[in-house]
Length: 342
Image (cartoon, rainbow, N blue to C red; front, side, top):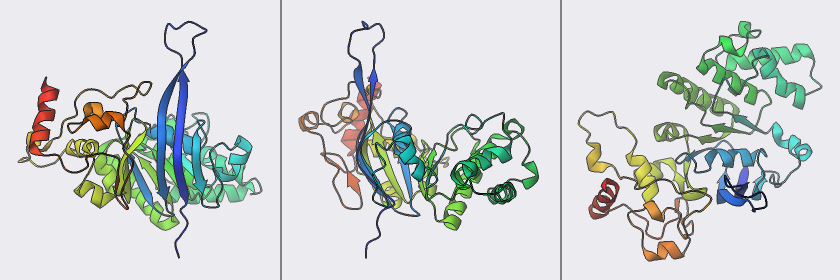
Protein backbone atom coordinates (compact mmCIF):
# COMPACT_ATOMS: atom_id res chain seq x y z
CA UNK A 1 0.00 0.00 0.00
CA UNK A 2 1.46 3.34 -1.07
CA UNK A 3 1.77 6.12 1.50
CA UNK A 4 0.14 9.41 0.57
CA UNK A 5 2.67 12.26 0.18
CA UNK A 6 2.77 14.83 2.93
CA UNK A 7 2.77 17.55 0.26
CA UNK A 8 1.96 17.18 -3.44
CA UNK A 9 2.77 20.30 -5.48
CA UNK A 10 1.58 20.60 -9.06
CA UNK A 11 2.08 23.48 -11.52
CA UNK A 12 2.90 25.99 -8.78
CA UNK A 13 3.18 29.50 -10.22
CA UNK A 14 3.99 32.88 -8.66
CA UNK A 15 3.76 36.01 -10.81
CA UNK A 16 4.43 39.54 -9.63
CA UNK A 17 3.29 42.67 -11.47
CA UNK A 18 6.19 45.10 -11.84
CA UNK A 19 6.01 48.67 -13.09
CA UNK A 20 9.09 49.69 -15.03
CA UNK A 21 11.08 52.62 -13.69
CA UNK A 22 10.13 55.75 -15.59
CA UNK A 23 6.99 54.21 -17.08
CA UNK A 24 3.90 56.38 -17.49
CA UNK A 25 1.28 56.01 -14.71
CA UNK A 26 -1.23 54.51 -17.14
CA UNK A 27 1.21 51.93 -18.50
CA UNK A 28 0.27 48.37 -17.60
CA UNK A 29 2.69 46.64 -15.20
CA UNK A 30 4.75 43.80 -16.64
CA UNK A 31 4.61 40.23 -15.31
CA UNK A 32 7.61 38.82 -13.47
CA UNK A 33 7.43 35.03 -13.41
CA UNK A 34 9.21 34.13 -10.18
CA UNK A 35 8.00 30.51 -10.06
CA UNK A 36 6.79 28.84 -13.25
CA UNK A 37 5.06 25.46 -13.12
CA UNK A 38 6.96 23.69 -10.33
CA UNK A 39 6.00 20.06 -9.60
CA UNK A 40 7.27 17.91 -6.73
CA UNK A 41 6.14 15.67 -3.89
CA UNK A 42 7.40 15.44 -0.32
CA UNK A 43 6.93 12.35 1.83
CA UNK A 44 6.57 12.37 5.64
CA UNK A 45 10.01 12.50 7.26
CA UNK A 46 11.79 13.31 3.98
CA UNK A 47 14.22 16.16 3.31
CA UNK A 48 14.04 17.88 -0.08
CA UNK A 49 16.97 20.15 -0.88
CA UNK A 50 16.29 23.11 -3.19
CA UNK A 51 19.27 24.68 -4.97
CA UNK A 52 19.90 27.27 -7.66
CA UNK A 53 21.44 30.69 -8.20
CA UNK A 54 20.14 33.82 -6.51
CA UNK A 55 16.99 34.97 -8.28
CA UNK A 56 15.89 31.48 -9.33
CA UNK A 57 12.74 31.50 -7.15
CA UNK A 58 13.78 29.36 -4.19
CA UNK A 59 12.61 31.72 -1.44
CA UNK A 60 9.51 32.69 -3.41
CA UNK A 61 8.61 29.01 -3.67
CA UNK A 62 8.93 28.66 0.10
CA UNK A 63 6.80 31.72 0.78
CA UNK A 64 4.14 30.54 -1.66
CA UNK A 65 3.80 27.23 0.17
CA UNK A 66 3.04 28.95 3.47
CA UNK A 67 0.79 31.62 1.97
CA UNK A 68 3.07 34.65 2.35
CA UNK A 69 2.82 35.44 -1.38
CA UNK A 70 -0.16 34.79 -3.68
CA UNK A 71 0.27 31.79 -5.96
CA UNK A 72 -1.57 29.62 -8.49
CA UNK A 73 -1.56 25.89 -9.05
CA UNK A 74 -1.95 23.22 -6.39
CA UNK A 75 -0.15 22.33 -3.16
CA UNK A 76 -2.14 19.44 -1.73
CA UNK A 77 -1.58 18.61 1.94
CA UNK A 78 -1.72 15.05 3.22
CA UNK A 79 -5.39 15.47 4.18
CA UNK A 80 -6.27 16.30 0.56
CA UNK A 81 -6.74 20.06 1.11
CA UNK A 82 -5.22 22.44 -1.44
CA UNK A 83 -3.19 25.06 0.45
CA UNK A 84 -2.98 27.48 -2.48
CA UNK A 85 -5.54 30.26 -2.36
CA UNK A 86 -6.63 29.66 1.23
CA UNK A 87 -7.64 32.75 3.18
CA UNK A 88 -5.56 33.67 6.27
CA UNK A 89 -8.32 32.27 8.47
CA UNK A 90 -8.41 29.00 6.52
CA UNK A 91 -4.61 28.77 6.47
CA UNK A 92 -4.51 29.13 10.26
CA UNK A 93 -5.57 25.47 10.51
CA UNK A 94 -2.29 24.45 8.88
CA UNK A 95 0.05 27.01 10.46
CA UNK A 96 1.01 24.66 13.28
CA UNK A 97 1.74 21.87 10.78
CA UNK A 98 3.97 23.98 8.52
CA UNK A 99 6.60 26.21 10.11
CA UNK A 100 9.52 28.18 8.68
CA UNK A 101 13.10 28.95 9.71
CA UNK A 102 14.36 32.13 8.08
CA UNK A 103 17.72 33.08 6.61
CA UNK A 104 18.79 35.88 8.96
CA UNK A 105 18.60 34.48 12.49
CA UNK A 106 18.70 37.82 14.31
CA UNK A 107 16.38 39.76 11.99
CA UNK A 108 13.69 37.06 12.33
CA UNK A 109 13.46 37.55 16.11
CA UNK A 110 11.63 40.40 17.83
CA UNK A 111 14.31 42.38 19.73
CA UNK A 112 11.75 43.58 22.30
CA UNK A 113 10.76 40.08 23.36
CA UNK A 114 12.68 37.69 25.56
CA UNK A 115 13.69 34.28 24.26
CA UNK A 116 10.96 32.69 26.34
CA UNK A 117 8.32 34.97 24.87
CA UNK A 118 9.57 34.37 21.31
CA UNK A 119 9.46 30.58 21.61
CA UNK A 120 6.13 30.65 23.48
CA UNK A 121 4.38 32.93 20.95
CA UNK A 122 3.25 30.09 18.60
CA UNK A 123 1.84 28.19 21.58
CA UNK A 124 -0.26 31.17 22.62
CA UNK A 125 -1.62 31.40 19.07
CA UNK A 126 -2.22 27.72 18.32
CA UNK A 127 -2.62 26.25 21.82
CA UNK A 128 -4.53 29.01 23.67
CA UNK A 129 -5.89 26.56 26.25
CA UNK A 130 -2.50 25.87 27.80
CA UNK A 131 -1.80 27.35 31.23
CA UNK A 132 1.16 29.69 31.72
CA UNK A 133 3.08 27.18 33.81
CA UNK A 134 2.70 24.48 31.15
CA UNK A 135 3.78 26.89 28.40
CA UNK A 136 6.90 27.77 30.39
CA UNK A 137 7.76 24.11 30.93
CA UNK A 138 7.36 23.35 27.22
CA UNK A 139 9.54 26.31 26.31
CA UNK A 140 12.31 25.20 28.68
CA UNK A 141 12.13 21.63 27.38
CA UNK A 142 12.38 22.87 23.79
CA UNK A 143 15.33 25.11 24.65
CA UNK A 144 17.17 22.09 26.02
CA UNK A 145 16.28 20.07 22.93
CA UNK A 146 17.90 22.63 20.60
CA UNK A 147 20.98 23.11 22.77
CA UNK A 148 20.06 26.25 24.73
CA UNK A 149 20.19 26.60 28.52
CA UNK A 150 16.78 26.96 30.21
CA UNK A 151 18.19 29.67 32.49
CA UNK A 152 18.57 31.86 29.39
CA UNK A 153 14.79 32.10 29.03
CA UNK A 154 14.64 35.77 30.10
CA UNK A 155 17.46 37.03 27.88
CA UNK A 156 16.96 39.03 24.69
CA UNK A 157 18.11 38.08 21.16
CA UNK A 158 20.99 40.59 21.06
CA UNK A 159 22.61 38.70 23.95
CA UNK A 160 23.08 35.59 21.79
CA UNK A 161 25.42 34.66 18.94
CA UNK A 162 24.18 34.08 15.39
CA UNK A 163 24.17 30.31 15.85
CA UNK A 164 22.26 30.59 19.12
CA UNK A 165 19.70 32.92 17.48
CA UNK A 166 19.14 30.33 14.77
CA UNK A 167 18.59 27.72 17.47
CA UNK A 168 15.97 30.04 18.96
CA UNK A 169 14.29 30.26 15.54
CA UNK A 170 14.32 26.46 15.25
CA UNK A 171 12.86 26.13 18.75
CA UNK A 172 10.10 28.58 17.86
CA UNK A 173 9.26 26.53 14.76
CA UNK A 174 9.27 23.20 16.63
CA UNK A 175 7.28 24.24 19.70
CA UNK A 176 3.92 23.53 18.01
CA UNK A 177 5.06 20.08 16.80
CA UNK A 178 4.86 20.68 13.03
CA UNK A 179 4.95 18.00 10.34
CA UNK A 180 6.99 20.17 7.92
CA UNK A 181 9.65 22.82 8.42
CA UNK A 182 10.74 25.00 5.50
CA UNK A 183 14.33 26.17 6.01
CA UNK A 184 15.13 29.19 3.83
CA UNK A 185 18.94 29.25 3.73
CA UNK A 186 19.13 28.84 7.51
CA UNK A 187 22.93 28.62 7.71
CA UNK A 188 24.08 31.05 5.01
CA UNK A 189 24.69 33.86 7.54
CA UNK A 190 26.68 31.65 9.94
CA UNK A 191 30.34 30.66 10.24
CA UNK A 192 31.28 27.28 8.77
CA UNK A 193 31.73 25.62 12.19
CA UNK A 194 28.37 26.97 13.38
CA UNK A 195 26.76 25.83 10.12
CA UNK A 196 27.78 22.26 10.88
CA UNK A 197 26.28 22.49 14.38
CA UNK A 198 22.95 23.79 13.10
CA UNK A 199 22.80 21.22 10.28
CA UNK A 200 23.55 18.35 12.67
CA UNK A 201 20.92 19.74 15.05
CA UNK A 202 18.31 19.72 12.26
CA UNK A 203 19.22 16.15 11.29
CA UNK A 204 18.96 14.97 14.89
CA UNK A 205 15.65 16.71 15.49
CA UNK A 206 14.26 15.35 12.24
CA UNK A 207 15.06 11.79 13.29
CA UNK A 208 13.67 12.27 16.79
CA UNK A 209 10.47 14.06 15.76
CA UNK A 210 9.79 12.56 12.32
CA UNK A 211 9.87 15.94 10.59
CA UNK A 212 9.83 16.60 6.87
CA UNK A 213 12.14 19.37 5.68
CA UNK A 214 12.36 21.59 2.63
CA UNK A 215 15.94 22.84 2.83
CA UNK A 216 16.89 25.80 0.62
CA UNK A 217 20.59 26.57 0.22
CA UNK A 218 23.34 27.74 -2.12
CA UNK A 219 25.97 25.45 -0.63
CA UNK A 220 25.62 22.11 -2.41
CA UNK A 221 27.90 20.34 0.07
CA UNK A 222 25.44 21.24 2.84
CA UNK A 223 22.50 20.13 0.70
CA UNK A 224 24.19 16.80 0.00
CA UNK A 225 24.75 16.21 3.71
CA UNK A 226 21.16 16.79 4.81
CA UNK A 227 18.90 15.97 1.83
CA UNK A 228 17.25 12.75 0.69
CA UNK A 229 16.38 14.31 -2.69
CA UNK A 230 17.52 17.48 -4.45
CA UNK A 231 15.54 19.80 -6.74
CA UNK A 232 17.46 22.20 -9.00
CA UNK A 233 15.69 25.46 -9.93
CA UNK A 234 16.55 27.90 -12.69
CA UNK A 235 14.42 30.98 -13.44
CA UNK A 236 11.54 29.50 -11.47
CA UNK A 237 11.54 26.15 -13.31
CA UNK A 238 12.68 22.70 -12.22
CA UNK A 239 15.73 21.62 -14.21
CA UNK A 240 16.39 18.35 -12.42
CA UNK A 241 15.14 16.44 -9.40
CA UNK A 242 16.26 13.12 -7.99
CA UNK A 243 17.76 11.20 -5.09
CA UNK A 244 20.77 13.01 -3.67
CA UNK A 245 23.31 10.26 -4.37
CA UNK A 246 22.06 9.77 -7.92
CA UNK A 247 21.98 13.47 -8.76
CA UNK A 248 25.45 14.16 -7.36
CA UNK A 249 27.00 11.07 -8.95
CA UNK A 250 25.34 11.39 -12.35
CA UNK A 251 23.89 14.87 -13.02
CA UNK A 252 21.99 14.92 -16.31
CA UNK A 253 21.23 18.61 -16.82
CA UNK A 254 24.04 20.98 -17.94
CA UNK A 255 22.98 23.49 -15.28
CA UNK A 256 23.26 20.90 -12.50
CA UNK A 257 26.66 19.87 -13.86
CA UNK A 258 27.83 23.49 -13.74
CA UNK A 259 26.61 23.94 -10.16
CA UNK A 260 28.27 20.75 -8.96
CA UNK A 261 31.54 21.51 -10.71
CA UNK A 262 31.73 24.83 -8.83
CA UNK A 263 31.75 23.13 -5.40
CA UNK A 264 35.19 23.62 -3.77
CA UNK A 265 37.20 20.41 -3.32
CA UNK A 266 39.59 20.31 -0.30
CA UNK A 267 42.40 18.59 -2.21
CA UNK A 268 45.72 20.35 -2.99
CA UNK A 269 46.17 18.15 -6.06
CA UNK A 270 42.73 19.00 -7.44
CA UNK A 271 42.80 21.07 -10.64
CA UNK A 272 39.43 22.89 -11.01
CA UNK A 273 40.30 24.00 -14.54
CA UNK A 274 40.17 20.37 -15.65
CA UNK A 275 36.67 19.67 -14.39
CA UNK A 276 34.76 22.94 -13.97
CA UNK A 277 31.84 23.41 -16.37
CA UNK A 278 31.64 27.19 -16.84
CA UNK A 279 28.40 29.14 -17.09
CA UNK A 280 28.45 31.76 -19.82
CA UNK A 281 26.64 35.06 -19.40
CA UNK A 282 24.36 36.24 -16.62
CA UNK A 283 21.02 35.03 -15.35
CA UNK A 284 18.30 36.38 -17.70
CA UNK A 285 15.57 38.61 -16.30
CA UNK A 286 12.47 36.72 -15.15
CA UNK A 287 10.47 39.58 -16.72
CA UNK A 288 11.63 38.45 -20.18
CA UNK A 289 12.78 34.82 -19.92
CA UNK A 290 14.16 33.03 -22.99
CA UNK A 291 11.72 31.13 -25.16
CA UNK A 292 11.66 27.35 -25.01
CA UNK A 293 14.20 26.13 -22.48
CA UNK A 294 14.97 29.02 -20.12
CA UNK A 295 18.56 27.77 -19.71
CA UNK A 296 19.36 27.69 -23.43
CA UNK A 297 21.09 31.12 -23.51
CA UNK A 298 23.80 29.79 -21.20
CA UNK A 299 23.83 26.13 -22.23
CA UNK A 300 26.84 24.71 -24.12
CA UNK A 301 24.54 22.12 -25.70
CA UNK A 302 21.75 24.40 -26.95
CA UNK A 303 20.19 23.53 -30.32
CA UNK A 304 17.42 25.24 -32.38
CA UNK A 305 14.79 22.98 -30.81
CA UNK A 306 15.70 24.40 -27.39
CA UNK A 307 14.42 27.83 -28.48
CA UNK A 308 11.17 26.44 -29.90
CA UNK A 309 10.05 23.90 -27.34
CA UNK A 310 9.89 23.84 -23.54
CA UNK A 311 11.48 20.57 -22.37
CA UNK A 312 9.26 18.36 -20.25
CA UNK A 313 10.42 17.06 -16.88
CA UNK A 314 10.89 13.38 -17.76
CA UNK A 315 12.09 10.32 -15.89
CA UNK A 316 11.00 8.15 -13.00
CA UNK A 317 12.93 8.63 -9.76
CA UNK A 318 15.50 10.90 -11.45
CA UNK A 319 13.79 13.52 -13.64
CA UNK A 320 15.41 16.02 -16.00
CA UNK A 321 13.96 18.88 -18.08
CA UNK A 322 16.38 18.86 -20.99
CA UNK A 323 16.17 18.00 -24.70
CA UNK A 324 19.72 16.62 -24.62
CA UNK A 325 20.45 15.27 -21.12
CA UNK A 326 23.65 13.55 -20.14
CA UNK A 327 27.28 14.37 -19.33
CA UNK A 328 28.94 17.07 -21.42
CA UNK A 329 31.66 16.02 -23.82
CA UNK A 330 35.17 17.48 -23.65
CA UNK A 331 34.40 19.40 -26.84
CA UNK A 332 31.26 20.96 -25.34
CA UNK A 333 33.12 21.97 -22.17
CA UNK A 334 35.91 23.52 -24.27
CA UNK A 335 33.35 25.42 -26.34
CA UNK A 336 31.69 26.73 -23.16
CA UNK A 337 35.04 27.93 -21.84
CA UNK A 338 35.78 29.70 -25.10
CA UNK A 339 32.42 31.47 -24.99
CA UNK A 340 32.97 32.57 -21.41
CA UNK A 341 36.51 33.77 -22.12
CA UNK A 342 35.25 35.84 -25.05
